[in-house]
Image (tube, rainbow, N blue to C red):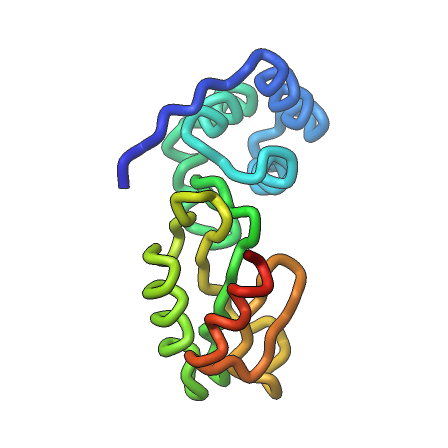
Length: 160
């Protein structure tokens, strides 16, 4: 995937420094800083990671390692309607992969990507705790249960 250069505005850099300072610029607070930053900016591009590394006095490699290790963190902006397909055991056994393939086909994106129009991003998650409704899909805060590949079109239609 090509890296999109993100130009940080001065007020964004100031906001980042404030977030780091709210955790006393403590290296041990890296995960909390990243959570708060993603909450604020929506994602964690390399440029944001560099500022955090500088402020917490840790290597950029360490920050990148944490960002890429935890699936919750993302380095690309999420779509207006982030779609997550649960691939936990119950959902997987009941056909989540076919549902995922259908989303990939219709939106023409891979997992972790955002549609060119910025409307949808696609991700997988592990167990949302609604195993009785497997396979489960969430779009933003809305949960859809017992989703079949045929139901994917109908879900997407709600957000057109």
